[in-house]
Image (cartoon, rainbow, N blue to C red; front, side, top):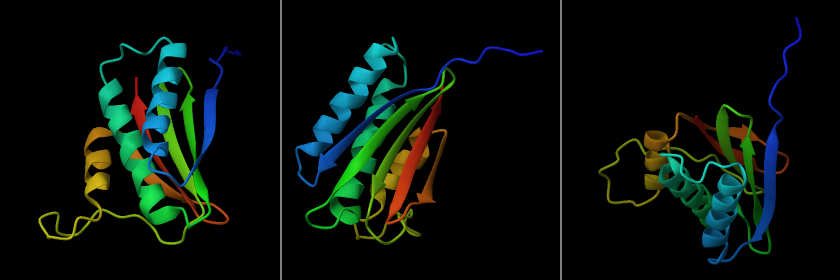
Length: 135
């Protein structure tokens, strides 16, 4: 028996390596949620915070000077997935000691706590860091 699947819906936007790109990425995501009639979804703030954290990491650590990052927001009817693609080297990770004075990695602690799943994938060049939220 063949069943109909809901179509995959996706929004992509490339951002330059500028501080203004972080709120712009949040606005794009909020606009996509509104378009998909999910603007009153109870986890909207969690998703937007994760977008801010992933985009900030790309801006500070992943996008070399003169480059930027790609934000992709995907919705398949069951899962919202945000991806941040950058061309930088290195793999983001949660710090071993979250109480250490170094500030690096704290955003990923938030992403890990708020998202249902998150991870890092390969890209040539660079990587894609993603987070998923079940509906």
